[in-house]
Amino acid sequence: MFLPVVFNNRLAAGALTGLLLLGSCAVLDEMARPGTAVGQPSEARIAAGLREALLVASRRASQQVGRPGGYLENDAIRIPLPPTLDDAATQLRRFGLGGKADELQQAMNRAAEAAADEAVAVFADSIRQMRPSDVYAVFTGADDAATSYLRTTSEDRLRQRYQPIVAERLRQVQGIDLYRDIASAWNRLPAVTPLETDLEAFVTEKALDGLFAMIAREEARIRDDPGARSTEILREVFGSR
Image (cartoon, rainbow, N blue to C red):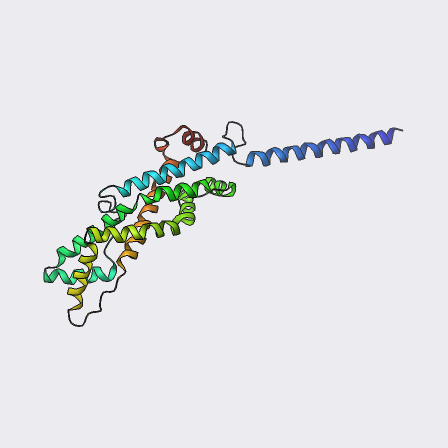
């Protein structure tokens, strides 16, 4: 009778050890998931915090680029003349037409600033559509993961909304007329390649590049700088991270 008891005790001990190991694995798995460790925000709070971060970063960026001088006075995102036009402007300065090139660059940047208000509503829609997998990827991703998400989900719609505004604004500030004047003067010169730049498309693409660059900067600030976390949920979620 003694041996079966020992055997049964060994079975019980093995079963208990197995249960303990399984329990430990479950605990480790639970701790590996965001928001479940002791003292950490819940997954729901993390999702809310990330959405808040996206809203804050996109609004700040849109306001910064949308103000007068938002593009023109910012060396990092100022829209240059298109490469072919820039080459022509260098030559045209010799003929006293450099001022027109400067006016055109100013008009291009003003057009981009005028379109910036369109971004807020488009971004808000993308943020509302975030899935749990999107939230996790952004939370555990690089410092520009949220910006990448916004660009992937909203850039096409932004382009559609930006370009008509850019075109109208370029007309209002005589950008199109300036471009035609420069192109006409350039194309009259002997042995030159005619200027054929789609100015509206060029300004739209550069405007979007600048906008997303500013969002990336704001995102990095929220992730790294406690002073940039302007709401309670941002401080809770990104402070824990």
